[in-house]
Length: 551
Image (tube, rainbow, N blue to C red; front, side, top):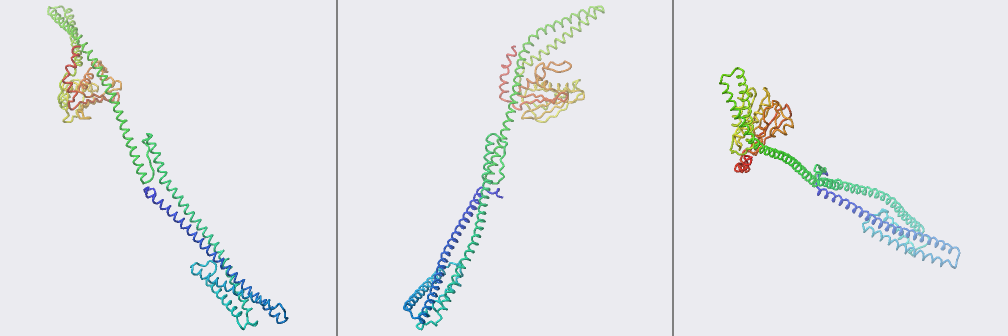
């Protein structure tokens, strides 16, 4: 429960407990001092009372002794006349008179002392006040009787003065014993009270000490230790250990501060993780863009080279094709002159070989035309093109080709997928992607073509379940003249030209495959709107490609 208190409440409780301990200690000290003061006053009073009681008993003894001696002297005077007897009797008479005066004086002071003590409302610790007053009253009555006997004009030896004095001695002695017994009882009672006070003081001291220890432990556990934990956790977080969490186990202001520190650490971790992921993405993009730039540079270099090679080869190819055609015409002229069967067979072979020469020459010309097309990309006009219509028309045309009629092509097209591109060039790219996918699957394979939106771009995805690609093929797939066909057909320029067309459109062409035999997936991404770079490129395309044409 204490852990759920606020720091202010804990401090108020601690200060209150300390105040109670201080007040309890102060009250105990003041009470002890007052008891000590009362005891000292009572002891002082009882010391005076003991002295008074002793004086009364002493005076009574003097009176009895003097009266006894005087009685003996008077008896001696009656029996034997002595010269000194009268003077000795007078001495004893003076002694008795002085003793009576002193006793009356002591008794008066004693009674005055008792009256002052009674007026001060101080309780007796030695003798019961009523019993003490009764004893003094009795002594006073006997003293008064003795005084009457002594000063009586008819005083003679037959009066009971001796018995009265004996009674006075006994009474004062009893009074003195009463005071003495009271002192003994007071000593025993004081000892018992002292023991009780010591036990009480020990218990109170132990209780106060326990409260101080409890308060110290609570302060250390609930305030000091959470502060230390918070400080060490803050140092760890400041040192970069953002995964460290501070748990104080309380529900006070320090706990709120620890939760704020944990939330701040979590935000640091989230920001750091986000920054790290962003850095990885940027590094990947940089690597991809670098690879694309290298490929573009390679393609540009190949384009310059291809333009020059195609231009230089076209003239010899044209001469070869023209010469083969002229020789074919000559062979036909010779075969019309009624040759012999052997000659006719020779003419037919010549005509067939010449036709093969012409076909291969035209094939070489087609390759050089492709090279020229590869070097002249970019000189095109772009507009908003409906990719769904383009793909539907293209697939409808491809499935009619004889070698593809036994294979399955499925389209999955969304409506309103438009791209800012050159329709003929993108149609050539999609055609290359579809035909490559069709050629990579067997008769039981299938090709799926998706037209959709992806990452804010128009996307054409061609997916097949054919032979698939390994990592090496994916790395070199878009390089010129790179082909892995087993039949040896193809020039390896289709995907290179497609890649360059897509790059000119500020799009991307991504090849994906889980491995050999697991199919392939080619993703074509095109911008949906014209960018400033494409607009400037449309204005400057003739200037950019003029050196390629010259080459």
